[in-house]
Length: 72
Image (cartoon, rainbow, N blue to C red):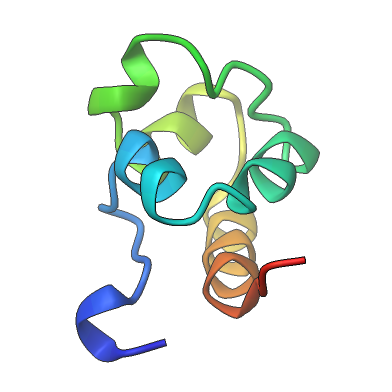
């Protein structure tokens, strides 16, 4: 993935899902089952994770997985 397209903790969930819909599976597996809610459009991945009780080290692992996720 190009540097400018790299997913970070600050990437908005809605933006991520528009650009990379296959990421939904990883978000749901991590415990973020409400990715379709209106807040997901404005909330960063980090904010969403923290509000669902996902720890920092697990957020870092999720970000790595999201950056490496390939389309099926």
